[in-house]
Structures are given as structure tokens and as C-alpha cells.
Image 1: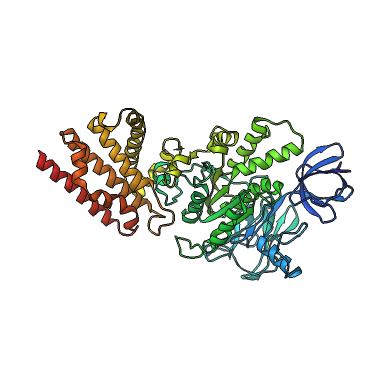
Image 2: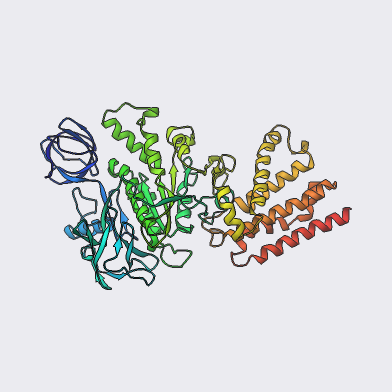
Length: 603
């Protein structure tokens, strides 16, 4: 029986209702005459404290509150890919259509209390029983996670219909190939003497991680096409990372590049508390983008969750859990999923505001004391796993969260706590951004704990010397950073020739490798093979130049001999496409020949 109470207090998104003694923690409730969506976050006696996911303007004490008996949950089934949701899985295009039908001449704003289906209930999907030619046997045993059929959700994603968690038994009946809605029964399982109907969609509580068979080591790199990420600070499939940076450092563009170019099969993009104009840009651009791996529309493998800063603050907190639950669902099908959240700082601010309304004791900078545990719960849902059921399949959820520290201060609570739970840290630098160096990832402050794990993949698929070249490039960049302090004090002329060469090599690496134009058709994406060839070009040039310096040839003469060729080497990144890597080899041979001729003349 549904719990019924009445409102006694309203404080922004927080509503207190009495007569709720039979309510449960995190139960979803309908608040007021308009049946606004809310969630119980605290219970004291017969009073329930509810965070409402819609605007509470106009709500009055005395209005009813009705429990649903279930926690905040999302619908999982075909129809999710390509959709644009708000923070509690309400499809925004359908809401816009519904409002336009009611008042076609009025400006469209999301109305309170509007209820629409999260996934289309009456659309027919072509269901095909079984997978890879094998059809489930009638009378055979089935359990949670077993794939019993497939649906072509988009041209890029085959939706694998699975037995929902909690169901196991004998398969009594399965539908023939044909057109079905998510309301239709497609299988019947006999469990403990009772018949359980299986449909193409089911609900799942967003705060509970979906189960899996085993967690695996993240050893496969997530190829993003961004050189400084893939080569120096790689992300593994199933890994966790953060992109912290001050205003204007390029967090959003970096996340766009990851979402557009990465080799993840499914992308979940959460705009969590971002400005409306930034989210509008995402909503306008993503439907126009082409998937670089197939040439088809990017939205055919993307889910967008839009929860801007002017939307209800409580829904901002929920959007993170909704997004990661959708990601886990496609992970269970055996797909590699990338979830990007822009930004987790806005999510933490929502926690702070709600905690203040609940009159909880504040911790650092007013954030609640449980900020660290909430961040941990979120990032711990990443991972590469062996999915439940048969056939055997591996999937992953990779989580990358943008962090917006005020004034670019990485010691503030959200950034410092986030660093405890992630393994990749791409630190965006305001100085680099202001000097037009993009992506503005600081190679001194950034780190990746996946370098050792992904090295095998690079050695087997690209070149066995990848780690050697990558480490030497990092040594050059770190040594150059040390030398800059000396240069600022006494100038370049006081350095010995080897150190001068380090400065030259670092300049070549920064101009020709680390800088990357996200809007250039050639430079926006670099394949792993091109990344290694470019790195090899600069490191082999440095090694040969070092031999000349050791034989007494000054760096000034080397620079003079190279001349215009330096420009050609730096411009190779956006003049030589991914399918013409032999041109980089030719450029390298030309550069080394110049150095050999210089050695011969001076020797």
C-alpha cells in the first residue's frame, strides 16, 4: 500500500512531509497536486525529508505526498541510444513535443509535473531470438545476464536483450522473430514453480551498481586520438580519470574530443550543472557529428543527459547516477562505454546546497562530510568486467569527470578528494591556455597509472619500442622544466650545449607533438601509429643531434643547418594524414641526412 503524507515545510528543493512513518530511505515519491518527482533522503519519526527533482515554486503546505514503494530507478531497454534526457531520465525532445502540442504559440519551458515515457512504449522493435546463430532451448536453464535475443537499436548498436538480474529458472517459451514493443512478453521463465514474464525492458535502481561475474584488469587503452593523452597519460578501458582546470582552459573541448573520437562503442555525455549555452552547443553539435570510425551519425552511439545550472539542483545530483546506470547496462551487453561528466564540481555544489537545506554539519568549504564517499561510490562503478550469463562477453565503463576548481586551485576539496579515487589526472594549465597551447594539459602535473598496463598493447599493435620512446620524451620535457628556472635567472647562454639541445628538443615536442588542433580535419585525430611515427621523428632527430653535440658541434650550427626543415617537421602533424605515414618516414630520413652531412663537413 502506498504511503501517503502531507507537506509541512518547503525550503527550495527540500520538502518535509509528515505521516510518512512507513516510508523507506531513497523511496521515490510524488509530491503535491502536480505529482512532482522526489526522493526521500532522511527519515525522522513520521517525517520524511524529500529532495524534489523539479521546481517547487507554488508548492504549498498541506498538499499530499504519495510514496511509490520503489527507489529512484531508470528504464533500461531499446530506445535509450540517441536520446536526450534530463537528470531523471525524462526525454527532453518528447517533453518539448508534448508542451508544443498543448500550447503551440507559447515559449517552451519544461512544465512541472509533466510525465512522459523514458523509452518509447509503443514503438515496435525487430526482435530476433538468440545471438550469433544460437537460439535458447525451450526447457533449458537460463539465469540473469543470459542473452536471449537481439534488437537493432541503431545502425551502430545491436541491443542485446538479457534476462534481468534476479531471474533464473527454466525457459518455458520464447517469442519468434518479429516486431514487438517493450510492453510485449518475449519470454517466459519458470522460477520456483511460478511463471515470470520477461520483456525487452526493465527498471533498475540508480544508486545500486549492476552486478557482474568478475572484475578484470584494465589493460586495453582507450584510444582517443589526442596525442598527449594516448602517448604520455593513457586511459585504459574501464579506467577512471579527471580533467581539472580553471575557467577557459578547455575542459569542455577536451571532453568533446573524447566523446567524439574515442574508440568506445557507446558514449554517455552528462552535462551536470553546466551553463545553458555550453549545453546548447553540445545538443546542437552532437547530432551533426559523424562517428569517425564508421562515418555514421555520432548520436547512433551516444546518450546525452542535459541538466543545466538553471534546472532543479536536486536533479543535478541524480543525473550522475542515472548516467552511470545507463553505462553499466550497455557494459553488461559486452560494449566498451565511455561516460564523461561535465562537471563533477557542479554535482558537488548540488550536494552542498542540499546538505545545507537539511541543516547538516558542513565540512571543508561548506561541502558535506560525505563528499569523499559519494565521489568514491561514483568512480568505483567504473571498470572492465566479465558480464553475467552467456555467451561470455567482456565490457567496460570508463569514467572521466571534469572538475572546475575555483581559480584553478587544485587543493580545493572536490579536486583533492577526486585524486584519491582516479588513476588518470589530466591537469589543465591556465598559463598554457593563455599562451594558446591546446590541449592545455600540463605534462608536469599530470599522471597516469595505466602506462605499465597498456604498454603490452602498444608493443604488440604499434611498435615494441613504444615505451622506450615515450619515456625518453618525458625525460626531455621534465629536464626542460628544470632548466627553465636556470634560464629565467641567468639566460640561455650559461647552459652547456647538451642542455641547450634539451631546450630545442622540448620545443620541437611541444610544437610538433603536444599541441593539437581539435578543429583541424587532419590534426584533430591521430591514430596510434601516427602518434608513434611523430614521436619517433623527434626523438631520433634528438638522438642524432646529441651525437653531434658530443663531437663538439654547437646547437646553434645544428639549428642553422636544419633551417626550414624544422617547420616541415613541426607541421607534419596537420599536413600528413593518418593513411600516409610513409611521408613521416621520408621526412625523418631527410632530417637525419642533414645532420649526417653537417657531421661530415665539420668532422
